[in-house]
Image 1 (cartoon, rainbow, N blue to C red):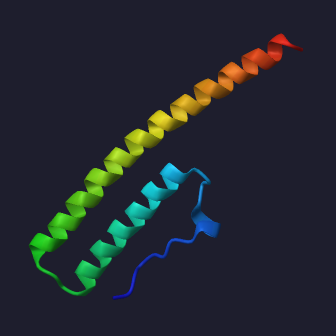
Image 2: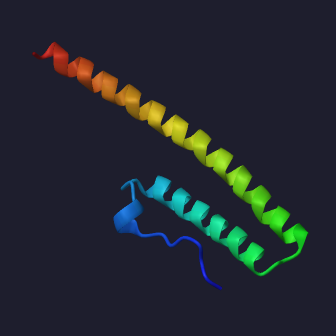
Length: 86
């Protein structure tokens, strides 16, 4: 069973454990889908993996949006505090 994509921390890590773990899960699901296709598995197996990939991707993007929004807010507060002391 060959994978389509191999995770490499040196290349792909964003240095945020939660996000990296989610990305690794997405890579795993992509590889599962690829292998199911290569092995000509039943349509039901392909549908199962594809649906999980779609649902997980949607969840991941919502969480990432929330995380990034909070990070931007924290940065804005930090900038405002820094400006006060200039």
